[in-house]
Length: 114
Length: 110
Image (cartoon, rainbow over all chains, first blue to last red; front, side, top):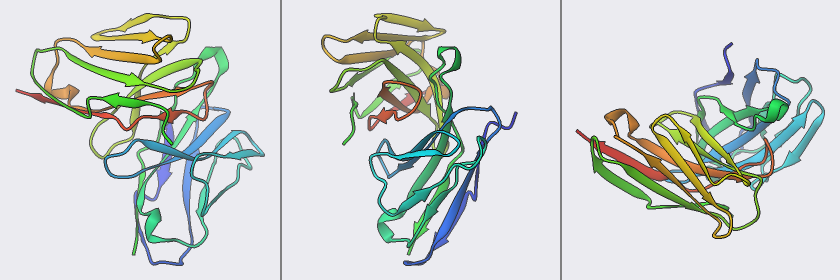
């Protein structure tokens, strides 16, 4: 299993540009989440999904959109990039089947907005 | 706002010593998890302790949970250079929507 994969690894955007960060998992997990991590900080939840077709907002959703058309994929869209969105973005998946609650993280996407 | 707060923010010890990190949280939880993050990498799950458990072990890791004080501790025994990383506690009521603390940066000196 590849686990959780994210693309791209690095991205530089100009203010106002839009882009999509890709996330995929091959573990058949029902839950997927997007987090951002700013320097010296913990992770903050942007959006999450409890299954295909179901998404909800986390702590810092403004400026981001998500969709979950399949179990495997959970893309994060930046609508109009701003310098405040410069961060490292992590995608994670998890399952509650069998009482397993641990989250599996992707390697991250380092985004810089100029 | 972040639910968990780790203490200390940074910890530097000699190889072979034990490292203890603490986490405090604010609201009721179903479980508390600890994760490790090596520099520039994603987080890796270490251990989960449920709200009805008081102590849990996994290899050189020992986690305690005191729900009355809303606090948890992570003990790493016989530390190794490879344990150098940031450690985060995360709280939640299920498999999704975890809330992470700001982390403890642990440095193991040879």
